[in-house]
Image (cartoon, rainbow, N blue to C red; front, side, top):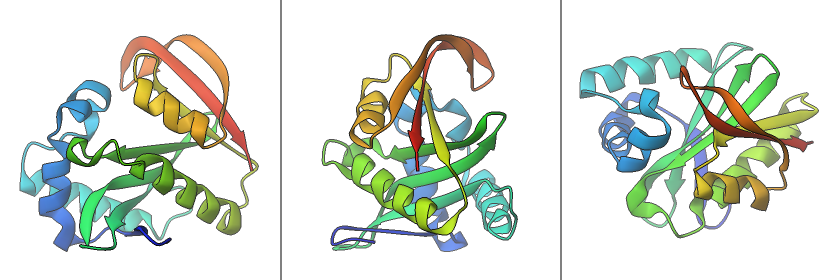
Length: 165
């Protein structure tokens, strides 16, 4: 945590906020598999996330909380992929433009560096997602690929960036 944000494990009491945050236009556009259709579906996914904390393979998904008012802004995550580990992040659209994505991602990267034996992290985004590209750049990721790739099950134009820890 820092002065503004806290990154914590998700729990069932967060389901309403997680569901609401999943409904913004950016999720539909950039992460459609992270849009939930109901509170029941959200609860099921949160249960899976909670159980994954005890595994070595994750995914490891944590809530980003604004400390001054205990608002759930979104999440950061670490997901195992073929090339290693991918970092992900999402701040609900109504809270964007305040630096929360970059701040939360940097906090999470520090946690990963200090608590996991990883040498590098990969960031993947749609090439058209300017905000995500900006976060990766501000967090010290280096662009390693731009072109066709599979993104959420569909062939799209993507970028891949890497950060050595």
